[in-house]
Image 1 (cartoon, helix red, strand yellow):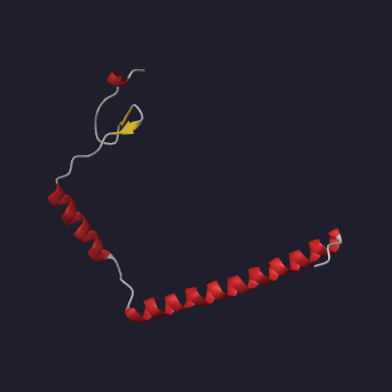
Image 2 (cartoon, rainbow, N blue to C red):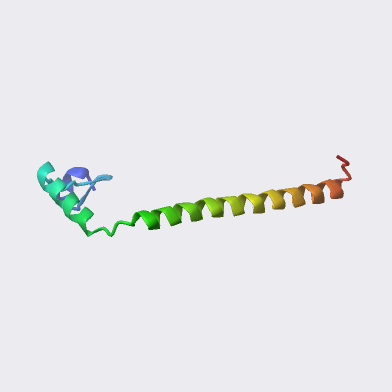
Length: 84
């Protein structure tokens, strides 16, 4: 099937590319603004609490991986008979 035999239209695949719908920049910006108004934005307090929780989880994960790494180092050293 050749590329020229395919119909050109909205959402129809042309070769390996999709046909793009033609939208004016003004219409596009109106739609973006309308969608942005639908979003429920977090409050400053929610953002602060979430940020603090991310830092706490990073700290907990780093301690966990430090301990896991040290335990594996000790086990491998013991199995191989390496004294450090």
